[in-house]
Length: 287
Image (tube, rainbow, N blue to C red; front, top):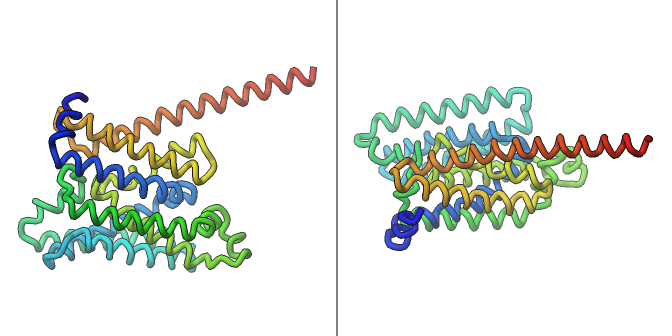
């Protein structure tokens, strides 16, 4: 750890990585909470994997892969949102189709682009240590946009996540709000790809929020706790991976995954203990 701290104070690439992780944690905590509460991790997975198509096309055309990722993520979110609201019985099939089409388009265009192994592998598996100041600026702008949308539509998002029918009766445009929610999930996915890569992005999106959900049912508290956990996992992942030169993204996910399992066990133990206490008090009152 001391070696990591010394390197952090002198190495700009580590400072960029740490800043990226902190910025990504805000979007991860806020949007990941909606994903966990709404139970739409599979939809987020479909959006995430469709992103590869946009990356492949952008790289083939000589543009920045992250720009293609944003376009593909938003397009996938809109299509999935419309299908989910209007043709619910075919939702899984359509998500699977978009997932497969996005991946296939990405593979085809990547294969037609010479030298693709150098850059695009970092998007697939994550390489937070290679983040540039330009990437950080893009992440910061996207972060501000996400937080602004969530603040503006917080009540509507909450209503749609917990009870769509009630939200509709209260005059909320459920279709518009749901698609907007999927769009900010799509942007968050693009941000997190910079940290852990396309393959592990859903884990970082959901695990901190899932852990936060063990200890709070209030949405705001879940968001704050999930954001803090995201920062902790990112910083620890960078620190642990630095010395032995491990992949930072995979290390971050390992720490988050083990933390979730430990939290799950602790929560189960506390719940059983509470049940036993309530039963004991009930028996004592009956006597």
